Length: 467
Ligand SMILES: *[C@@H]1O[C@H](CO)[C@@H](O)[C@H](O)[C@H]1NC(C)=O
Ligand SMILES: *[C@@H]1O[C@H](CO)[C@@H](O)[C@H](O)[C@H]1NC(C)=O
Ligand SMILES: *[C@@H]1O[C@H](CO)[C@@H](O)[C@H](O)[C@H]1NC(C)=O
Ligand SMILES: *[C@@H]1O[C@H](CO)[C@@H](O)[C@H](O)[C@H]1NC(C)=O
Ligand SMILES: *[C@@H]1O[C@H](CO)[C@@H](O)[C@H](O)[C@H]1NC(C)=O
Ligand SMILES: *[C@@H]1O[C@H](CO)[C@@H](O)[C@H](O)[C@H]1NC(C)=O
Ligand SMILES: *[C@@H]1O[C@H](CO)[C@@H](O)[C@H](O)[C@H]1NC(C)=O
Image 1 (cartoon, rainbow, N blue to C red):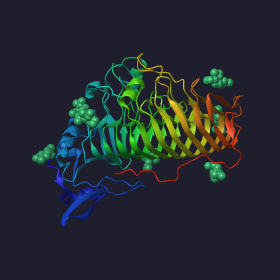
Image 2 (image 1 turned 90 degrees about the vertical axis):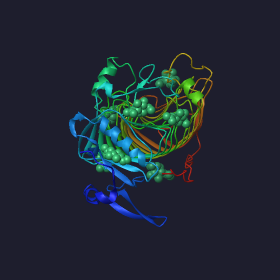
Image 3 (image 1 turned 180 degrees about the vertical axis):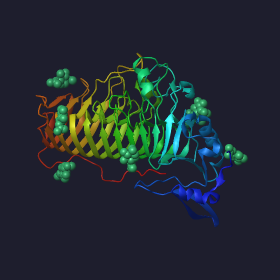
Image 4 (image 1 turned 90 degrees about the horizontal axis):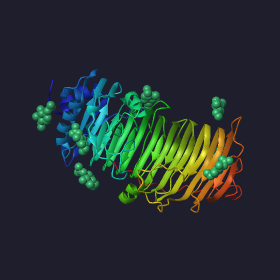
């Protein structure tokens, strides 16, 4: 049945049943009512106060796992977009399995998934528009040219929230991975959620499974919160990065649990000459309370695409289990710009190939037009309070010949080794820095400062994310 989106007073009963409560607020003496999502499992959900709400079922949606809901989603959001300047709106996805192709979000809008709602990403390529490559990448990541739009896509938005009571977004990635391995895809695979050129973005309290490629990709955006996500994909699936903040300012990633076939968090800012030209760094990024399992990739990667620069990153309370490396800096000649002012405090790790890994030989260029004189500068990289066990090799720290990585600091790090560790635990070339209280003893290029010389971690509070 098709109905009008309602003022929420009329749907009080439904909303209470759905776990929502009505709050009365007073705006300029005029009584108005807003929907507020109960904070049901410890993640404060902000940005969920919306004046209007509707259910996907009102727009002809069918949650049978078979019918396509692409049109219903787009019709619902197009309709609700009329309330952007009048208190905003919320689209509720009820329990059920909602097969859908890609749809676009709008401003002052919340997409809210019930805990028993699952969005199933369509495996039919015709349900996915092909859009231009990202200007800071110059081409698709899988193939030259365009790329399939993301399942949930938004561009040029203000105040947009994708959340739920731990509802599920299932990417049904297997067919995409097969086609990718067989080289059958004409365009770059879609991501699950991509938000571009937007301000005040929240993605929270959801489970994301089996993405065709990256899971969450905020790009060219500011004031981004990613919170309380469970992201799961087979550890051998191709490029299923968890969260990729890309050319974003003021981002907070917290309380996420990620098992993936690629880096759990990959911080990026564009690729070689395209990223240098676009010139938009990722800066003021906080990552905390992250748990990652990724046997063939990093817990947190900086790069390899970092050509707009990456600066002022703070990571705290990081847990890595069965992962290749903890924090990894990947870069290459041709990337240009910098990775600087990186502060990591409190990492607990078990079963790691390497704890520290940074190298300037990543290679991988968009085309042959990259500038061989564009040398990335890697500077002021700090790690402290690290405990790791069952590690094969403590560190590979390999700068660019003639252009060393400098200002590396490692303090209070205790690294326990596997039964069959590498003979050389620290391989350091073209780097400079200091160390304090590190076991096994680091390479001589990390000058020992004596005990109790902690690396920096700024104590001033970070610019808070405005939502
Ligand atoms: C969309 O909104 C308008 C009110 O502006 C309403 O008349 C119409 O019925 C709505 N469509 C649906 C399917 O709810
Ligand atoms: C969503 O937005 C993209 C980019 O602006 C556009 O190419 C695509 O057609 C839109 N999709 C729909 C269903 O309107
Ligand atoms: C979105 O914003 C960008 C950057 O401001 C601008 O270049 C682009 O034209 C905008 N796109 C749309 C569809 O408004
Ligand atoms: C969300 O669901 C996933 C998958 O079922 C589960 O592992 C996770 O613990 C849940 N998260 C919360 C916060 O309830
Ligand atoms: C060293 O690191 C451990 C583990 O994070 C922490 O418990 C301890 O307080 C740190 N010691 C100092 C002196 O900061
Ligand atoms: C230690 O790491 C090795 C791989 O190096 C792994 O096979 C083994 O299961 C790990 N042991 C424990 C106790 O986790
Ligand atoms: C150490 O790193 C250098 C530079 O990448 C490499 O050439 C060398 O083979 C490495 N040595 C060991 C023992 O891993």
